[in-house]
Image 1: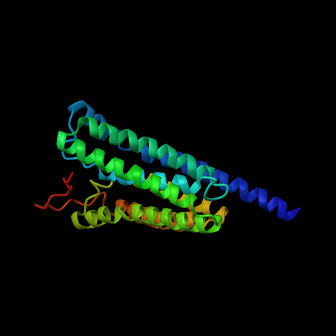
Image 2 (image 1 turned 90 degrees about the horizontal axis):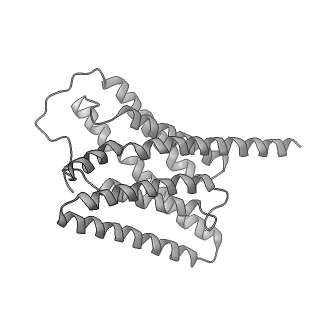
Image 3 (image 1 turned 30 degrees about the vertical axis):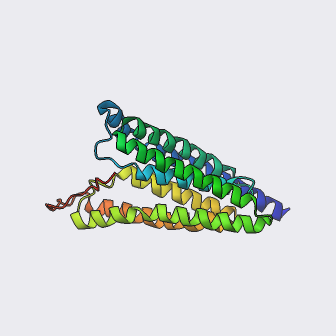
Length: 235
């Protein structure tokens, strides 16, 4: 009876953490909307880069596939959050293609087709793996590596904040949403005994804490003048 009660408690806590992670992730997914409102209004992508959205789409697709019943067990909330994320990233990329210059349109469209093609190869290749455990481990490592590299990207922003002593390019609510989402899925992975979820999200939580601490420390610090460009304007 005790073990049954413990199992129920674990399931409730896991689902609560997963639902919370989905909610906090939604905040991340809608955060670029002001940027895309500007792109649509000006009918130009200006100096904005599409690469973060291309990469985010790939990450969402891989993680959604990992959460599917074809790969792992009882990870529906991983599928929902990453499917929603993939829809948002696809919408952003389409807006980029519509409003970009002709040469950039072809470049972005080519990258989009490359991502979709690679994902199809991953799906078909994993389905050809007869052993479900080997399939789980293979796609698990792939999704884990993708998540860790995504969570590591704020290291560039952290370096920028320390160098300029300014949090101008590290929005507080974006950092907070990242921390809350990572922590929620870290707990979700713990309760589901899934290292391919709790390891990368644990790293994401630590990086989120680092960003929040830096924000608290530097938000009132005067920004040092610098002649160096603070935003990478590469396409």
